[in-house]
Length: 211
Image (cartoon, rainbow, N blue to C red; front, side, top):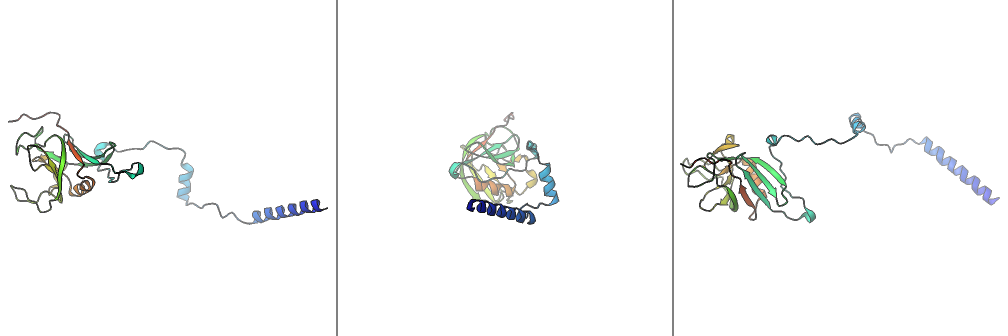
């Protein structure tokens, strides 16, 4: 009798549990807005990303490198003088930021003082200076923006990357030899470089005759 009684009690308990679950509404189901529910229902597959054309990029700003164990990665600068662009690149070759610049009025390698050309090659950073109050030697205008990244360019002094009081000149080819940037951009770049950074200035494809 005991086994049969035990079986009967089990059947009664299972029936009671089934009835109780049937009577209790299912509140565990997530509630979505109609727009979100429609989006979820329509999502079936991924599509290739639609990236803008390079000339449409204002910047790709990411001051932090992602690497195993969060190791520090040196950041270098590459200036594409012919296309008036400046790139911040980490040691893995990843482009972290991209900005417009104004380079020298004249094209080709710098060969003399005040020749209105930007030197070409790879250079170390001599220092980063607050240039808020610096004035240009000829006009005495404050034209260097908030910061001046000074480059060690053998044979020449005073070449660097800096802000500007003429934002309409960026991008372009109007400077005496330095690379001008918008002031908000030089602030960003200044935070990403250090004494280990190198600055490479790409050559113009066709040099002007030196006269």
